Length: 145
Image 1: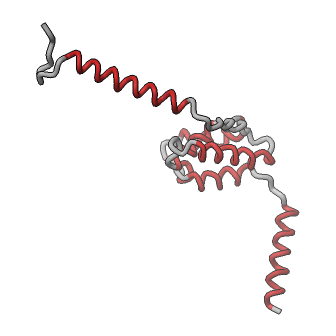
Image 2: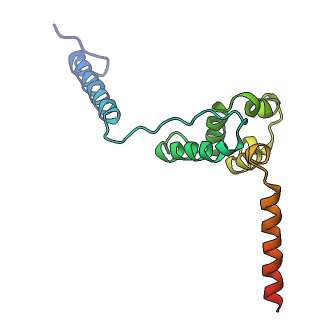
Image 3: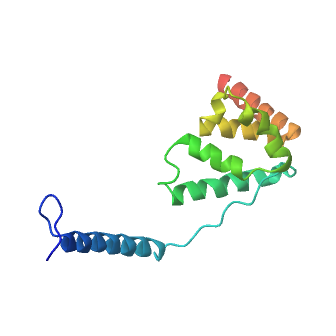
């Protein structure tokens, strides 16, 4: 006596179909995991103590965004990823905003978040800034002549 489902399909065919679908899914996962694509390193955590490391940290994060486009489809995911690699002073700087029920705009927009991160932790070079401003003034004066 063979067993049938309510729709008249033999139970053995249904089990075989499920097993085939399951086997195909496993095969697909194995192929994805064994791709020849190299795995990128995760970014070194940034603690804010050395502002010179900020550009490298941001670059490492962006490389991971490019490598895993499917994981970072919106800006919030990117912001959360970067936040997860902050520690020490850098994390402390953002802690109150993360915990506040009213989220600042930069917490939802990656470009604004980068501006906030840079504003707090990039190297400040007053001499370089002054030189750039003087150069801008010289160029402006030269165009007037």
